[in-house]
Image 1 (tube, one colour):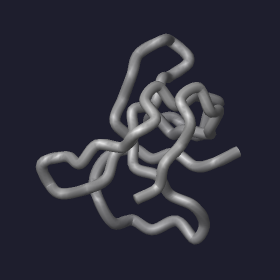
Image 2: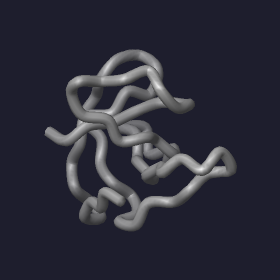
Image 3: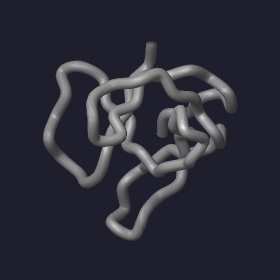
Image 4: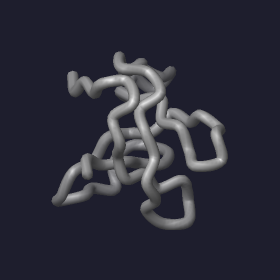
Length: 69
């Protein structure tokens, strides 16, 4: 399980490419599919559940992703 600090800045892809965002909640959550997701706040203030991915990126799982700065 990967953890991040609340407020930590990350690069997140909300569907239009990577943008600067930040971690909204330190502890990850497990979705209905059993995937680990993190609550990430977008620049517009909305919060989303994203999967953490670092290079090499894979296409496994569902939804949108983020990575460390």
